Every structure is written in C-alpha cells, then in structure tokens.
Length: 366
Image 1 (cartoon, rainbow, N blue to C red):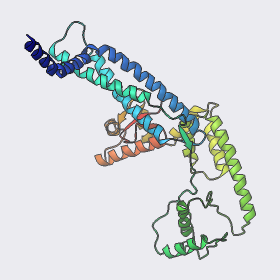
Image 2: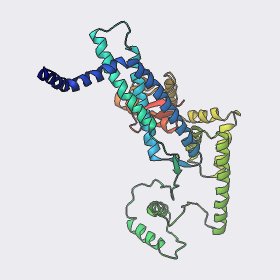
Image 3: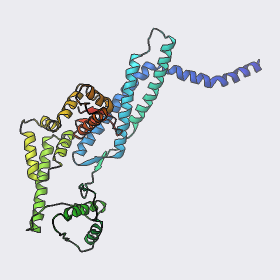
Image 4: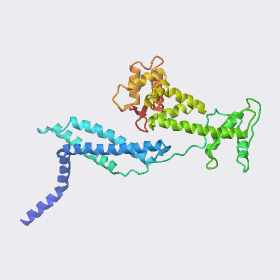
C-alpha cells in the first residue's frame, strides 16, 4: 500500500508542471473580464500620468527649455503601448466571452485574447510604475552660429585656411577682406562663418551685419544692442498673444525665421492679428493661408478623419490621388512624390503631426 501511495505521489509531482500550465491557461479565460477591466483602468491611469508630463514639458518649452531624452523615450513607449492596448481592447470587447457557454472556437479565441490582455496589462502597469524624472527638461543650448547655405566652391580652400588661421591668432580683433566685385568675398565670409560651428567655448554668438562703406563700428554695436532689445520685446508680446500655447509659438516662429529686422517682425505680427481680437484662430489661419492650393485641399481632406486619427503616409497620399486632389497626369511616381512633399510641408507647418520617429504615420493637429 505504501508503494502504491509513493508511486502516486511521484506521478502527481511529475504532472504538477502540466497542471500549472493548464491552470495558467485556464486563468486567461476565467479572468478574461476582470483583466480586461483592469487593463482599461490601468491605461487610463497611464494616460493621465502621460498628460501631466506633457503639460509640464510644454510649460518648460515655452521658457526655451528642451525635453530630456529619457522623457521623450518614455512618452514614445507610452504612445506605442496606448495604440496597441486600444486595438486589443476593441478586439476583445467584440469577441467578449459569452456567459452562455463556449464552442471550441470561442474558447480558443477567449484564451488567445485573454493571454494578450494579461501580457498587455503587465506592460501598462510597468510603464505606469516607471518613475519619470521630476525635472523633465533642460536649458536648450543656443547655437553660436546659424550655418548659411553655400554652393560648392573651387579655389577658395587656400584663402579660407589662411584667413581662418589669421583670425584665430591671439590679439586679432579685426580682419579685412577686399577685392574686386565677384571675386568671392561674400562666399569666403560665409565659409568663415560656418567654421565657427566647430569652435567650442571661444565665442558667445556670431552676428552677420551688412553695412555701407562709411562704417562706424560704435554705431553698429549700438544698433545690434537696440535690435536685440526690440526683438526681445516682440518675443514677449508673441508669447502673451499666443497664450503660451506651443503650437501657436511654433507656427509663428517658423514664419518669422526668415525675417531679420525688428520692423519685419512688427509688420508680420500686425498682419497676423489685425483681422480679429482672437489669438488662436488668426495664427492657424496664417499658417493655412501660406500653403499652396493643393496643400490646402489635402489638409481639408484630413479633417474628414476622426480627431487624432493616425493614418499611414502612403495611404493618405493614395486617398489624395484617388480623390483627384493630386493630379496623376505626369505619372504615378511624380504624384506620390508630390503627396509626400505636401505631408512634409504640413508637418513643418505643425498642421499635421508625425506619430513617432519612424515618420510613417501622421494625424491632424487637434
């Protein structure tokens, strides 16, 4: 009798792993509804935490700060998990376990979705438990110099090297370039300016000023100081009118990036806000009005999708072509290329938003 009991115990122990696996798999079905409810709740908590971080980042970016890489990475992971979870919840809700019993197909479907829900719940809870740094941004480093575009040059390498070496000598405060018209003085100066990109710590900022032949250094310095003050005052007014909203600040910033004088800034801002006392609409309308006609129609088409609906770039371009917004007369490849160009334009204008760094999906700005 003892031998039988011993054999039974040995057999039971051998089958224990099998029972455990069966129990785990059965749990995916028995806990289906409970885990689905927990997943919805955990995702809501994660989104709330993400939104708090986003608000904090936006508030700091208005002050000129830049988002930390670790915060950007966490937000990217949240974005991915949110998308996957919403798809899973929608699918599981449609195939939700019936209380009236199972057929084989229903049991298999419940097991498959239940397993995914359990795994997804762990991912959401893990992300939500990750401690995001209290400090979410850092002070952005302003460039010493903004590189100017320059075409490929020939025969200037020697002059560039000699001029740069002279400029880097201790005690050199002034350097003159002279020559007949068309010899390449401006091109050489542009190349010299670009060299400052590689110089670290020796210069605070490089300013390019065009003056007449009757030059007064003191007057130029005073003008630069005055210009900085006027630009700063305009910048403060812009932040106030835009209510600190990052989207509006980015739209205005891009439109003003090609304006070099305080008067140009003043005229541009007057044009932007003169039509109405409302701050938000004229800025967005200004960005829209600067689009080409086909880009305007493409953006209007995007308004047909639900809010924040994420769509693949290639699908969106196909829709535009299919609706005749983009002409296919010059061939399909050229039409597709034009579609991608329009997406780039709308993204740069902050009227469409790229979902992630893969740049394969976009959605319309809410």
